[in-house]
Length: 249
Image (cartoon, rainbow, N blue to C red; front, side, top):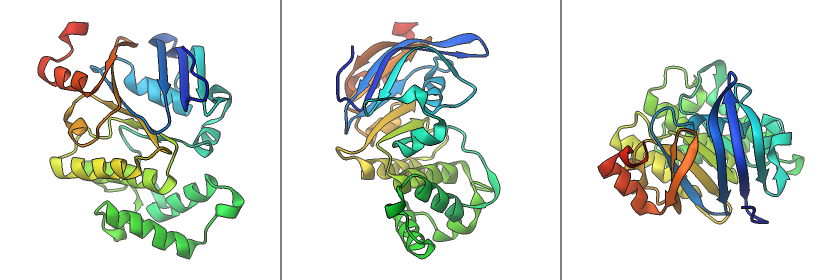
């Protein structure tokens, strides 16, 4: 079903990896300001789905449509999708040797903004450190190479820092909660909740309901074998926490 003026309209989306169909027909509509959680067992196609939306070259969209802000998202290159307001937080953030976190984010911020909104390195340093303090990150991390030597929790905080700096319209959060202890989980959740507004929406991919204790989703979808098999409210996540996915296998 297509709803005009929705932030994201996905119709009958099919995605293949190495000629094997992984996502087998997804319909999804996200309105501005909504947070949707997608839950499912390993291998259900969740990560493939969000990576393909961002334009990852390993994933081939073979059928279906995706409209973002009324435009055909599939015609855009990954950097154009980022400039349009799409953001992907990776399940396994990459290390980038030789590039400091501050330099990386400064370049990303200016690349995602029009010329009149570009800011100087001095103003950006103050802007970045403010966000780091909000996420309880030592500001010295800004001078370290991107994710180099970071713990798993520090890498995930750095992803949320990037999201807060870039302030996207739609964030695709691929298992941002995986591998986090409870303190890091709370900080990551705070970073996501800080952006919640009519101008920020998110797709939160997760195996477990624990992060949904801190981030309240508007809708929860269960994805099994490449399809969304059921959608509902927050109570659906609590059912999964108790019963698992046996009802849909």
